[in-house]
Length: 339
Image 1 (cartoon, helix red, strand yellow):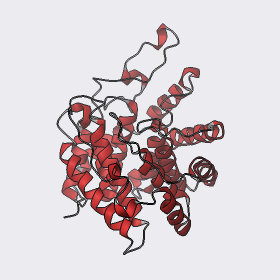
Image 2 (cartoon, rainbow, N blue to C red):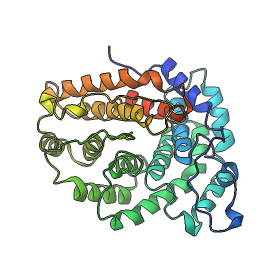
Image 3 (spheres, rainbow, N blue to C red):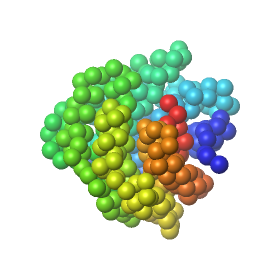
């Protein structure tokens, strides 16, 4: 049976996020100290995004909360989400996060993974048509604008993509940024992202998919395909995809269709592999939605998505090494292809 995002599942995921977005410690900072005055704790440095073990996980924890609030406004957890977002998404706290970005030592802060998630959070808030959603969106907008400008400045200098399966992955960042650009009507950013994607990936063919690596949480192969799905018109994408994974209808490369084994969920890096399973499910579902009914790859893609969800959806909570971030990837996967 296909996994479906229900109000009960969404509430469970939101409850997990509410349990860690204000948990300050343990904390892994991305923080360059230029002097003793920079020796500060997470909450002092980041008044909004100080929880969830690290800044980017706290950002996408807030994306999860905003998305559940929009999709299921009548859920029992909605009141707790609203109270949290009202307390955190305020102009003064956003101004403090902006001040941190303006530090010369913060030029590469959270590039590109955290940038992309902040943009997706801004896009999600912009979709929320309620009065409170408009207030939250307006409050966060300066931070979204700042990261969009950073990406516009960075992409012309990014001669090569990063194809790793973790935070530096270029395709994942572009995919999320493209969604922000579409929601916000930012044609400049959309054009720049599309140009970079075509330059980096347009000629790729016969992908061998040498994955997973031991700490991947993104599939370099499938994330590239998902990025190109968002860039290329339907017929052009299907032609590109047929060249990129020419044996997908036969289930090859087999590694892309088989869930990764997670040997130790208390190890933060090994726990990444649960995220790989969930992000692969996200990609396979999204890619399947772009393929015609009856296309052999479509059926294999949907089957692979379900098997990846079966492998890791039961493990989004339990040990904090996964619990502080996996629910967001579960929500991505469960919602893929639906909107």
